[in-house]
Length: 165
Image 1 (cartoon, rainbow, N blue to C red):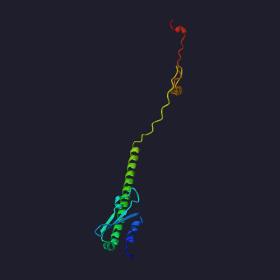
Image 2: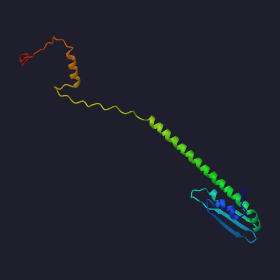
Image 3: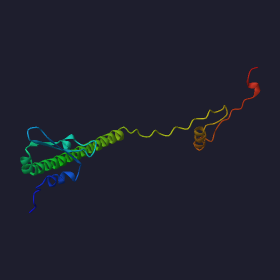
Image 4: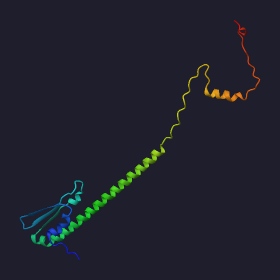
């Protein structure tokens, strides 16, 4: 069985473990005392809910009697709020990460679908043939045709007398 804090600083100890706390005490003219417990921010991006002050105005006797219970409640609420805020931040970070991954996956699928097949290798440029040149294709045809031709090939010869002057 744990004993509950009975004093001012025992009640503040759980809160002081994680942050600095500013205490202000002032008296008004009617015999009452105002106590402010103001937690300071630990990080600049920390929620303002974690720096909400506890302000109590009561007689000194009431403060001596009720302050420890008020501080316990304040530190418990503060701890729960800090846990809830951290849980929400973690959930948001996980959701953002999942959204980024889904977008990256979608982008990868689109890129994959848009991939253009590689262009065929460019054809060899054909060389310009001269008047008496024979292309490689013609040379192959001529070689292949040699075995298919008749052996009775007539060759005409021309004489210069065959042409009119």
